[in-house]
Length: 116
Length: 111
Image (cartoon, rainbow over all chains, first blue to last red; front, side):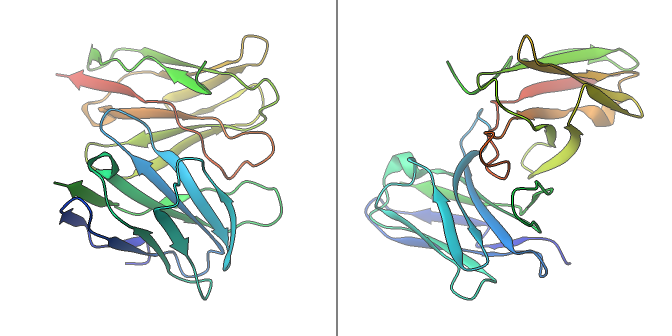
């Protein structure tokens, strides 16, 4: 399977715990994106990387959230001190792009987080 | 005003019907527009890009009205397999990779 993969697919945690999700993009893609989706809503942009550089972070990404893409390949999204409001589907997407041109983003299956 | 607004539906239509969804956007400088499709419990997938006055792909037609700041998606001859949520996406003009999604419009096609 050469698509975007995400692990784990499901995560249940207790409030206050830290969680980390991983995203493996399509191998030749230089851009990687994180989105969050709650029931009945469209995905919300969180942050994105071009290679290893984090280029933009949404206001939604509080200081409890941190994302990395250390070698420009896979990425991790960590949430510290989880809150019930963090319960959502966390989607990763990747694309190949240069400069300001838009290229199709391919989404992974998501990690569903439930905070009890 | 939300950046991208859609009627959440659901739209319940019989097979063979024609159905249209509208989406309004707030930033008049936006240049790129997309429709994504999301099946239940699945990831979004690009359905169509709308770069100019509109485009057509088989049974699907997307139109852009810049003056009124809305885009539409028309589905002709609906199939059961068209049942899904259709997400309108309008990135900001300064960064077309930052996808801004509407809430999505749910379509249910029945036999």
